[in-house]
Amino acid sequence: MRVSPRRQRSSLTVISESPRTQRVDRLIVERGLAESRHKAVALLMAGLVSIDGKTVSKPGTQVPSGSRITVKRPRHG
Image (cartoon, rainbow, N blue to C red; front, top):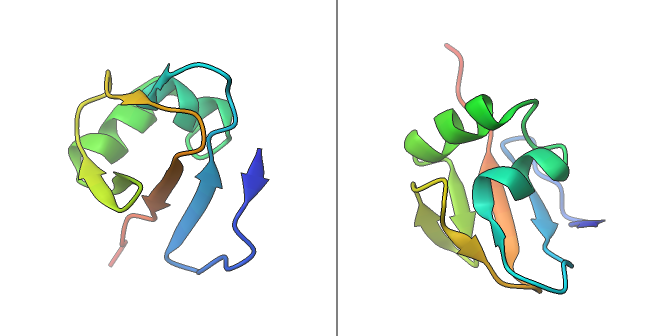
């Protein structure tokens, strides 16, 4: 796992380095961007996850190797 050197306070980006495609919800948990698949699904459904700049909302979306996954942090206000 590589973490983007340009970490922003509002989001975190990782690069998928798996040799095969993976479900985005599982990948988010494996990379430490969410504590559980339940929380990963909540982030996805809230529109806070993108793959290579395209927002995704379905937990079963397949992520090819080399893709950039960005998770925006939910705003608490």
